[in-house]
Image 1 (cartoon, rainbow, N blue to C red):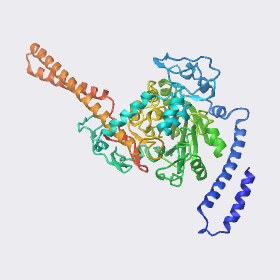
Image 2: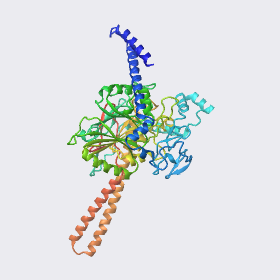
Image 3: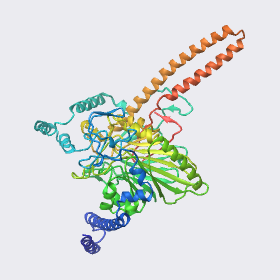
Image 4: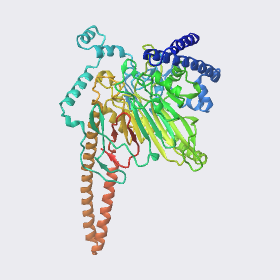
Length: 615
């Protein structure tokens, strides 16, 4: 096949060379470019397969990676139940049982969870497909075609599908709830597009709240957003939104990552609403890591992958299980450049800093594979890493593959043959400053299972997070794999993100909601949540203040009855007042922080760790 393509390209070159550049049609140029790209793909694919056979020998590539970094025994025996619910785990299915205090309403296995109740990478023991352990049936995408026909056809044909029983598993209750929410949104006036939170401010040692943030324009309308600039970019994470789920994220320590790269005009049959804000040529000269969350065409774009390979800018591709073979077979990526992870597994990458701890342009190197087990092991790992880094002057990046509620498929025949995930990124500079970032990929919000609370507990808190807010209508079709703006706010709070930015909207028309609806609903929800937090905090602070004053008066009366000197009473009053103020301060600190969730335009950037929090 490669020889035939070479012959075809050679003949095309001969024909094209006789024509003037001005007379050359765009179609022929595209055809020639296409087959040149295919020729490079076949060459890379052949080389990748040869290298894979050389690396693996009698072992699989995954086993080879684990042996290279001396972690095979740790990864394969992390707990007594095993890592995945495969054929070897004869635990049996449990429906409607309670696991760690949580009722699982769908078939599950104990081997799908660790001893602490965290979900593990799990497969269906009969089909071998990956599953979401907490909802193994309703979130696996199996009924996608039936629901898709019901969604797209609708009307009389939809009623016919109901009559013949094809779409009788649609949740009517969910559809009614979605219609009710839509009616309530449409009943609001246009002034709700801009959040106007309460002017009440709480001044503390950490944050000052005000409302002077700039605005961003989405779909021709203006929205209230958080500030997108910091005084010192060297001290914070910087995120630039390319479009959809594609972002360029730079970390202190001279690290750059690219998430779910998509620079093409189409995602499958869906055309892009606007060109991407950046092209591959606009990327930095070195992209340390490309993070790919799953294999859907709006997140894993074939032509964007080829363009990145030709640019020679990407050092490592970090992907969940199954996507490594796709990158090798379809795009010809070298297996040495791909790091394949499962849930809770991470890779540590380092760059050498100079003797003063300053950044340089050295290439990243893989240090080891790691796994997030518990707070105790993380603390021990941090201490050992700190001792090692202080002597070696290295900037480090720890990228952890985390769970998400989604599914995978590029064709009707490979559903859930590859894993999906989110990513937690922790950067540590040579000067021991730490920064954290969370990329949610594509995810739904589990109705009962505390998935994102677990992610926040094990990997959080985060300085910055990129959370999807679009492609949620109709709710009965999309709710299992995507989250709406209100659910995105809940995810922001659950993972304990200090600041989040909205992605996965205004790029491809994947669902029924208008393009300008997701940011509008998001900012309305942020304003409502923040106003509620401020109101509850003010009410409880007032009650606590009254209780404190009454207690102080009783202390004063008791002291005046037992002491003849007025100076003693004044001293006691001052001490009681200070104690009351300190107690009130601690009460306020116990409340959840205000939600900082930004909406920016494609091409704009936002930074983490602001000195002030805007609502």
